[in-house]
Image 1 (cartoon, rainbow, N blue to C red):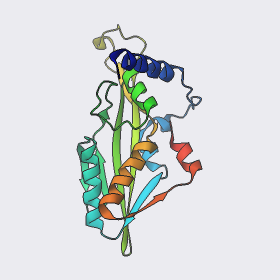
Image 2 (cartoon, one colour):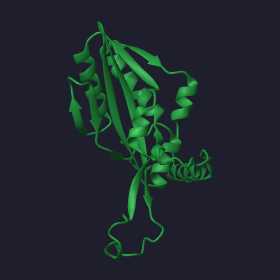
Image 3 (tube, rainbow, N blue to C red):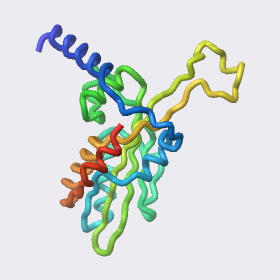
Length: 196
């Protein structure tokens, strides 16, 4: 593919992302928190026989996409990563953004993702549910004002925008391949409710 074709493709992708429609804003402050999105149902889960193998596979999957561990509780069944800022369109080695609109969005604004794996032991089987929360950087309109003028008001902050169900499915597939586990998918209504 020629350089001109790649440049044209990049422009088309960026224009498409700018013209895409978003759901209407819901004036619900709870929906802008990570905790809110972690409490929502899982879009996908992996069921396997051995808990330790399942844990190891989930840890391998998070490492594969470059996420760093923030909190790890093997006994309690929780593995959480630090947020990772999304790559730009030219960072072809970064593939945690699974769709073209996600790549375009990360190139036009600052977006980050964090992963949480919830583990459940159920008799002889164990289950892991990956949850990927997407956050966007929000900047106050008065960006030229110095922070010292009003230190109580932060100039910028992160707000949760939804879940990345495509990356959740990819993580589940990797875990299932390593463990020989079974993938259990939520119905489409649940998955649609989680998308941003």
